[in-house]
Image (cartoon, rainbow, N blue to C red; front, side, top):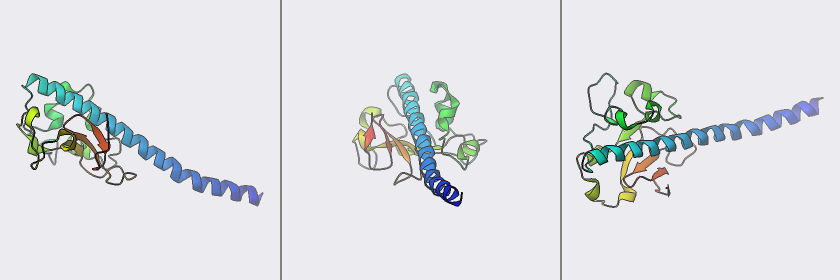
Length: 162
């Protein structure tokens, strides 16, 4: 009986970390889906505004602040308000600030056809949106990113998916 209990204990000790990693990867994948949908919402916005990026604050500290941010400006283009919240946002930053994602305000008012970020003009390496914090502990950089060409990536290595 003790041997059976010991084996069950060992199996449990091995299964818990694996299952936690799977949960984290699932949340990260859902976050990538949110960023993809926010990229679509941004493209809809760009289509109605002559391909010019919106002028937005990078974020806000409280929902009550009257600032143009992604969750207010892109709300009409977003199919579901839940896409503004990363599933891995355990600190509930989105509940306080309105979104889990940070806008690259250096792109404000720029034409999508001639973006420039720190003298970088390559859309595949210009970040547009990213997690506000390192929510994804299983990734090396812990953040997911949407780049100017609509690609999403886990971390800053720009190994992207289309």
